[in-house]
Length: 321
Image 1 (cartoon, rainbow, N blue to C red):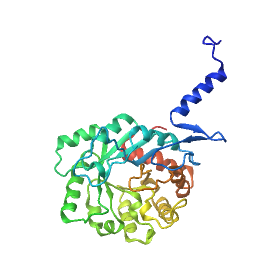
Image 2 (cartoon, rainbow, N blue to C red):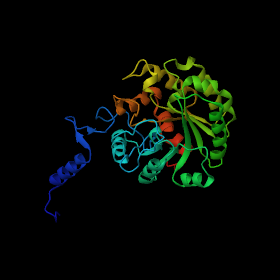
Image 3 (cartoon, helix red, strand yellow):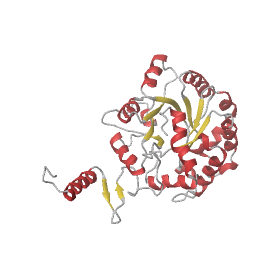
Image 4 (cartoon, one colour):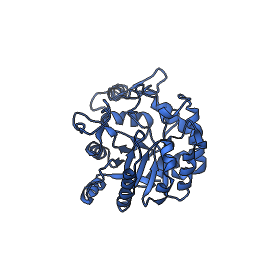
């Protein structure tokens, strides 16, 4: 029965047109092609993401709605709102995500909280906070989906005051069940062995601890392995473009580090895209980056753990099997 008078073929064609208008097109082979701002290429990854796969590290910028604070030291990225990120989700096949407040917003976490609210229940966040933050302000962040705080200082000197802040804030956020996320150079990580061992909160290291191109021979790798073995430390698998000599498409030096971490502690790893790749003038192909996971973790069971189960544990997503 066709009460509307529209045939099945016409209906499907109309639906396809609407889908294409939403940011996707079809190649000659019939594969989905999704144009994503701040990402090269348009094709889908070869690797199929499992249901509930999580992108555990990306940023959102929205200059029109959230002005940059005066103390920020980096620029707001264009075309990196929630609307554009949804296109990346569609292209990669992920459905959960972790929004990390970028340095362009300093300690203003409103853009991150807004993004979590738009993406809930499938989103959580990592904030950047002032050491003077009040307990009531921490509770507001917690209610908004924040599950960790980040120290990003690859270009900074790690002073005694900085270490004191990490110690103090780790104690405060541990009471909320949050973690401390660290983005430092491998050399910095290696010199702070005692700090990592004494923190009361869970600990997350960004971008495979920046040890490539030196690889697992860098002292930071041994330091991180020791704290991982204590059962409360995690590492984010993501390409660090400024720490690779080999580069795309294989990122061979980064791949060697990732494979070492996967072999040693697959239960302590999560994956992140780092979209919109704020430090890169030439944006990488996110499908290529996602496909690297197939080289890093060659069996489907391990990839499921990294993409689904580990994020559920670390960020508190509902476990669905």
